[in-house]
Amino acid sequence: MNGNTADLIERPYQDIIDDILTSVIGGVVNEPITFDLNTLRYPLAEAAQDVRKITGHAKGDEHYDFQKEIDFTYNPDSNLVIWLDGGTRPDGGTTFYVDYARKVSKSPLTDINVGSVSRTLSEAIGREITTVYQQINQAYLSGFVDTAQGKSLDLVVAILGVRRLTKEFALGQVTFFRDPAVEGNITIEDGTMLATKDGIVFQTGQLSTLQRGQVRINADIRATDSFKGDVGKVGSGAITELVQPIAGISRATNFDATFLGANDETDDQLRTRAKAVLRAAGSGTIAALAQAVFTERATLSEVKDPNGPPDKVSDPGTVELLVETEPERFPGLKARINETRAAGVYAIVTAPYVVFKLKIVAEITHDANQPQSGKAKIIDDIIAAIQSYTDGLASGDSAKGQGFIDSLKEVKNVNNFTIKDITTWITDLGKASSDTTVDIVMKAIESSPPGELDALRKSIDDALSTQAPSAVPAGQLVVRKDLVKDLSGNQATDNDIETGKFQITTNVDGNKWWLMLDMEPADVLLKEV
Image (cartoon, rainbow, N blue to C red; front, side, top):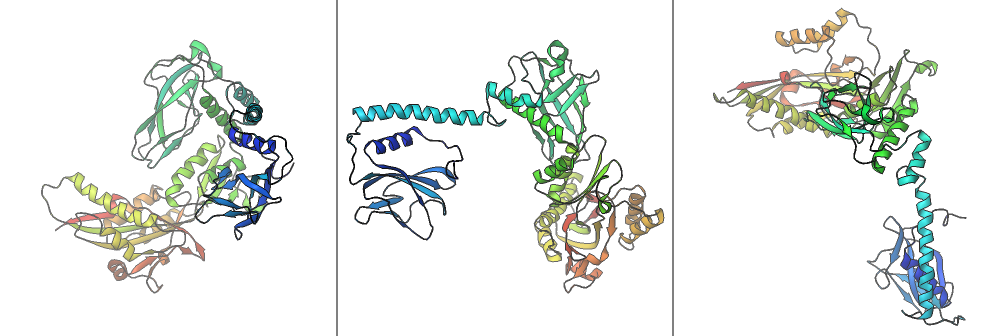
């Protein structure tokens, strides 16, 4: 066995027949030649009458049939295979295989035309060989959850203690409701467990995503192994308990009664349930949490747990994860980690973010007929424009005042605007706060725009209520006024801010951080002129 034969391959019937017919007339079958991107002319090992076929790797395909006089040609005088300009060529460094008829053949068989005895026998043999190839591949695929079918799938999932649910198990539908305080997409994993107050357990059969702005979503459920038969038939409104809380979901219920199924569990449903059992078996481990971070396309920079080395020990019952990801991905990442962590373990997820807030005064045309909802729409558009500009920044990119101005110019129904103040914080990477009440109040005063008593009162109230800005991943925020600079790199003045000649740097103590916007409607003041 070698690198060319170690993997199972799909061999179409026609390819096998071509190889057999080439052998019947004494030709050469699958002569291997390594393709070099710098060479287009390749000699054959023996003199040939003609090349019958060339196969190999191309365009990412494991098996590709190259076309004669389109992809390649054969020169009998020089005995060369020549790859043509404009045609498809093998991938660099891969092997292509050539079938050709020798110029001098000792085979007594020469008639391979359709209907001849030699061809008919060759086609019969080729059919049997093709069947064997298919059977070998099917046996190989039957060993994996994603590709096994029927009884083979039953045997694969049996190692997890999972059995196919028959039509004797109750079916139904449950509705998940969004927590009004949570925005963004919420993923409800396949295999999510729900129960009645009497302890009858059901399980979802597919992954569902509650999209941004969507209030609720329905998911199909089926009674679990322990509740076979009529015991799984429950009335409407009976399924209300989430076995494990889901971040962003406030409640769940079934509006219709469950009923006994008409069909057995399908292969897809069985695969989904088996994968959910496998995930649950690994939940709570550091490896499972690291995989959850990887799944959300983030980077895990540091882990602290109670059993870690002396410099990476967390409090009992907690695990601290320092991750790096785009701010817009963070809510989904945090939800995924909370779904993966073991029950009773508190996961603190932090990320290196520079959090900022703008105070904006915008002038709009006075309109006595303008409804309040119209003004709210303008405020939402202003925040969305700033968010759009912020989302386009990479780690370590500074936000330019001119960038904010250009984005705000796109907002309709706004005649003029002024950025009155900027507050910047950095995340404290999950460290517990040791601030006294006086410290907290002082920070609130420092972060409030001067001379605005209402804003100051609100900042102090938020601080005393421990309501940090909503964008904070975890832990405390530390005020960093030095991150707002003028275009020369010095501390920005009020005039620099109002004229847009400023930048918010994300280079924190020599490290590149992400920029995260935290603005609320109260941060935008509309003035009618």
